[in-house]
Length: 110
View 1 (tube, rainbow, N blue to C red):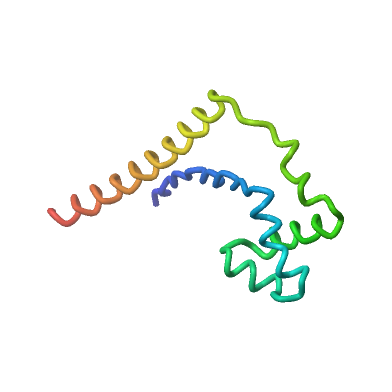
View 2: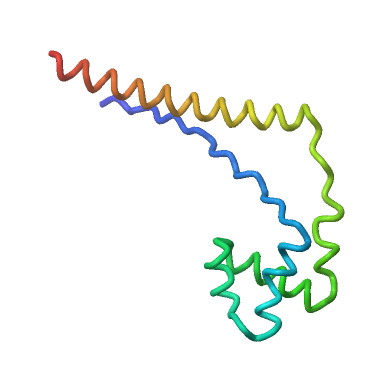
């Protein structure tokens, strides 16, 4: 019995979203004022509860405006490398799908 070789493609993480300080302040404002719950704000903004919770915690400690200030900018080469890795993963996935389709249609024609 032959073992099928399974090609695994590494799924790239989505790039981290960047939110402005103003956006973060506006997101936590209704929670701090008691007008909305964390879950409601998270759903409305399509963000995770954990993200809103982190912002809320930082706001309560007076550190919301400092979030993301230490994050370094990625170089042009790093951005290109990331783009190429993503493209490579997509092409590998497409190739795998095409191989399976070709095998399926080859069986059908016999």
